[in-house]
Length: 144
Image (cartoon, helix red, strand yellow):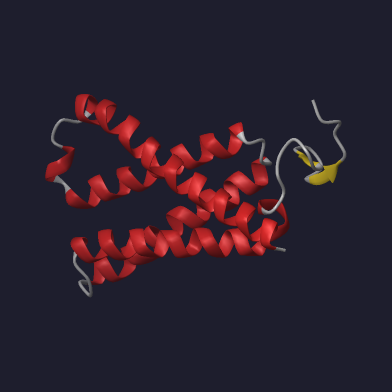
């Protein structure tokens, strides 16, 4: 049980690191493509959330997660920002609140997505069954 908790936590930390790497690596191209992006806080926040999601999705693909799991996690990461657009549009919150709350909620929705599929996040790739991308089921794979 302790090993599973450590693996689960390790997956979470890996995804958080991948999010920051994605955000960092994609920041430079955005500065070149859209030099005034920082002058538009809402758009800057949404681009940052997308960059973090891309970084996480790439890492999950490298770790051989199924497309379904990648899509679920991507939705979990972007959902807080989408939900907060309604209160922003109504004037109930400011862009700064959307930015802060969106990022805080992103970590919670990621955790919720992982808890819903905890069995997938407690396996160590390479020594245990791998998920078949087509069937979205585990199958035994010989260790290298």
